[in-house]
Amino acid sequence: MSNNNNNNNKPLAKLLVVDDDPDIVQVLKMGLVKNGFLVEAFTNPEEALQSFKSNAEIYCLLLSDMRMPSLSGIQLSKKVKEINPNVKVVLMTAFEIRDEEFSKVFPSSRVDGFVQKPIGIKDLTDKILSLIGDTSKRKRDEGEG
Amino acid sequence: MKWFDKEVEDGENSILIYPNLPTFRQIYAKYVKDQLAATREDEVEEANNNNNSSIHNNNNKQSKSRIILIAPFYETVDSVRHQLSAFGVENVQRLIDTGSLLVADSFHSFFPDINGMKKLIDSLSQRARKEGRTGVTAIVDVGFFFLFGGDNKAVDLISYEAALAPKTQDSNVKGFSCYHWGNYGTLTDADKEQITLRQKKKLLEVREMRNYS
Image (cartoon, rainbow over all chains, first blue to last red; front, side, top):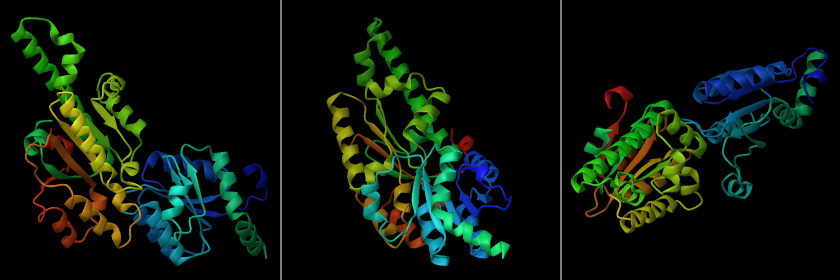
């Protein structure tokens, strides 16, 4: 699924994108905007959290790098879920993800999905839509109503 | 990198705080480059003393060099290898193949066994002795301890640092626990004191690389 399916020109959803690598943030933002999302992007997770606190209801999903200094993606996702449990969280990592390992330490962190970098924008878009499909449709319907 | 060697001797474990990833890359890359140059100088001197051309003798080269462990947390193993090459370290793969350089993701050296890193360094220390090398330099990013956050963060970290004595007689390991400033800054003053002052470890605060080359 891609922007081709978003023919009504309304944004699919608003995303909060966080990665301490400025190049990655820029590429993700460009690609996701092109595919119909509204994106707020940050390289500083603390600033991202502040933005989320101010606008917790408008975000459908947090897409965050996992390993970041000062506030890791795991810590950020916990804080975001505490503020708005309905927000979906996808963590990105350039490292190998071993599910059995993470299941031991993540039981309460409620991360909705992982993606391994590098990932194509189409695959990422599909992943996001699979998680927020219902939410974004509901929000759009509410907007139209 | 003279300040690195001057500040911390064999048998010592220290704390290094770096401001950002590009600076950390410069630190480890310059260290590896300088170690290679120093090894080469030693070999030239020895070759001249022996009045032969043993400079090209691979066995001799290996016996003189240190083992350098680089354990990053905020970049991949491939990224470190790339950075070393980009910084002018020649033939990184050969250094790895000959056992002079080991690059390992620090996450998997701390998780699931938090003592895994210590075990790895101990095994490198033994290998260095067996191979007649001058020692081991371990440059370890401890970002792992900050990944999950929570109350146990400092407890685990202090416990890990406590297991690394500030100075051990006859040890051939020179250890650097590397903290990103963004992480170190999240520790309380009491935690910082536990990690550094009470353990009497040398604290190297790197603000800008140019001040330390």
